[in-house]
Length: 262
Image (cartoon, rainbow, N blue to C red; front, top):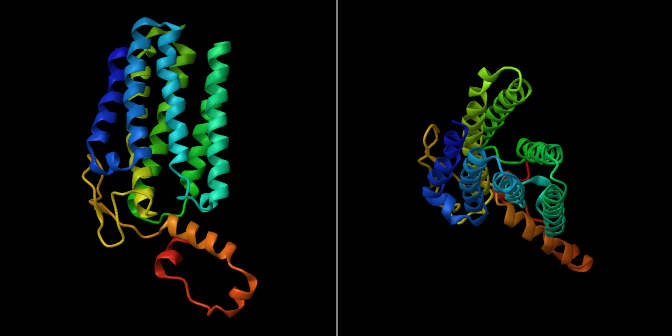
């Protein structure tokens, strides 16, 4: 049952890849592909219980959270400049690479769990503090976090009791189902946030991006806050000489930039 229920990740990932707005954004597409690989790797691991197959489950999990965090560059108030986005990307890449290498070398499951949990908490903190005010973004984010917490509770109970009471095995199936749903809503939240900030080719200020996702009561997402425009304006202001800045007329920011500044 654990092997079969693992395939729900692959089904969810394939469904997300079927969505046009996912395929158009390379980072979001990478998240969806990682979900598919997690499902296949988890199925192989639960069917064989071999460490090499366990790596096929857990390394894609690290890749997924790394890409999910990278997808928030230029879409979070703290990550809008080239310098902060580059430093953040390097830090995330180093954390993922170092954790993966250490886990492969030492084969210590607690090391993986601790590091992965810390990365998930950091990604959730970014999601809770980004600037998008569109309802679809926060609605999906909140459900993703709630489902992840529920799945974690089921997993913790099953891990602690399975040796003494085999009847708790359905809780591991529940972990798979709940976290697959959490990934579904998390990827959609990232997708809508990047569209909102003008970072995805799927949307434009003039044309809302239609959404057609199951179990989501929203039909579109609009480009309201352009992360790229904020970053470009900040770079231009930094390069402008003091003399030129003194002669330049003072202009009010556009409504688009005012929306992104909150």
